[in-house]
Amino acid sequence: MVSSFVTRLGLWASGLILILSFLKLISLLLRRQRLARAMDNFPGPPTHWLFGHALEIQQTGSLDKVVSWAHQFPYAHQLWLGQFVGFLNIYEPEYAKAVYSRGDPKASDVYDFFLQWIGKGLLVLEGPKWFQHRKLLTPGFHYDVLKPYVAVFAESANAMLDKWEEKARKEKSFDIFCDVGHMALDTLMKCTFGKGDKGLGQRDSNYYLAVSDLTLLMQQRLESFQYHNDFIYWLTPHGRRFLRACQVAHEHTDQVIRERKAALQDEKEQKKIQNRRHLDFLDILLGAQDGDGIKLSDTDLRAEVDTFMFEGHDTTTSGISWFLYCMAKYPEHQRLCREEIREILGDQNSIQWDDLSKMTYLTMCIKESFRLYPPVPQVYRQLSKPVAFVDGRSLPAGSLISLHIYALHRNSAVWPDPEVFDPLRFSPENASGRHPYAFMPFSAGPRNCIGQQFAMNEMKVVTALCLLRFEYSLDPSRLPIKIPQLILRSKNELVHSLKKHWMTTYLLQETSFNFCNWQAL
Image (cartoon, rainbow, N blue to C red):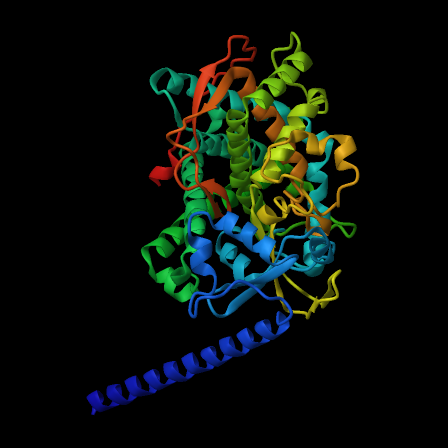
């Protein structure tokens, strides 16, 4: 009797699963039909019957493959990740302006993967709540707040350079990406939570490891299509590891928020915070309120802190690492940058806020490295309303857009000799007539990167100190291989040979934090 009941129950369950699977398949097919019909007027490269363009995108050299497609299909082309997710891939300034001058939300097909870790912060929010958060967070990036961070950037950079001195004595050449990543994470810990090197405890070290682990796992998930389904992913060892790392990161952020809120209730602690050399990002968030006196909830606070840690960590790592690659590859520009920095600093033994605006040649070189090696090579949107393009073609609401920043920055119709490293492209006279949507390392429009000034300041301080301390050259036997994984990385390593510069002038800093090798995670 019981056995018969269990059998019938199993049959009912199997039948229900089959029906639900059939309905899901119908839904996917209808969605594919809708997306394909919307892009009828946009031809594209041939697709695989199952994977679409995914296999070609995963292969080495995929970035330059898209550049070749851009030559073949001016303005835009279809891009299919599998058979059910199709984007219009754009790489032309007027097309970029048509979409990115608006406030369309991020494409959930990509950015929903981020929710488990960073929650609903600025990166994924849309509508009135996005506008409210953007308004509340903007004062946190005012130059008065950013000014004291110059010393923080220098402190973390000098700690990294001290390690490089030790490594350079033992090894002819070595990978710099992991060290730059740790330095960027160290800087963010100080700027976000107010942590100093001597104040880092075991909990903070665990947070370091968790953020590094989450970044790596997120990259692996995006490039592995079998992990795109939540149900399947959470059952895998990678999925469970991701959830454990999320828990560590969330517990750390929640505890810091609780402790800071409690401290703000104590007058003595309030005075200590006010007397610190700089306000950290958490201070700004806790004090933020709109015109009606509404503050961010604890959930919102955690989401924005975690978003800031995620967005400010890997992107800066990529930007600094590829800039140093450009300097090693083009020694004449490395020399000119170093001479400019020396002239600006004179007898100073540290970089000051006012020095940053004088670094004109260094800034042009940073921008040219961003053009050739954008930290985020591709971003995605979903149209909230129809869009009409400059050539008369259009897309309906609901369509998915991929802005391929790497291909946009190498568009030969906009950038003459696009493969040539030429910082003078960004001189005032050459940049003045350029299309405002031709150069988008920080995106553009109302949803551009809120932290771009923070990032540029960090780039200038860190790269200036790097160039003052060492001369950089490439190891011809270990050249990097570009791959897009959330950010622009190297498939192998970003290996440099370092030689201490004979006219080095820098301020030595005391350091005492542990180094973690990302690639061992």
